[in-house]
Length: 103
Image (cartoon, rainbow, N blue to C red):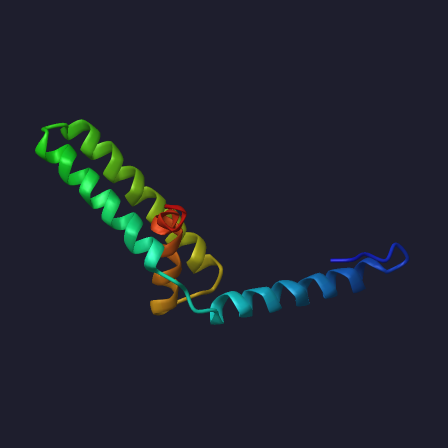
């Protein structure tokens, strides 16, 4: 984003709105790589099973509710962004468990 200091505010607002709309369209049409999210979900599932197996029910509830809360917040965010359907759920899934890409 480059700014011309002599540019009127209305023109600048229109240009920025067009850039935001273009980015939103690109974000909605982009295909998502979910391999890292699958890895992240697998790690969380194993950790939750181990916590349940060891009898750490308080820790199990805390960890699972953190991930559930994060998923719900991401779902609200994606819905507010205007994305719907399967692609929205994929974006939320990737936002919640996509940290598995870093492993």
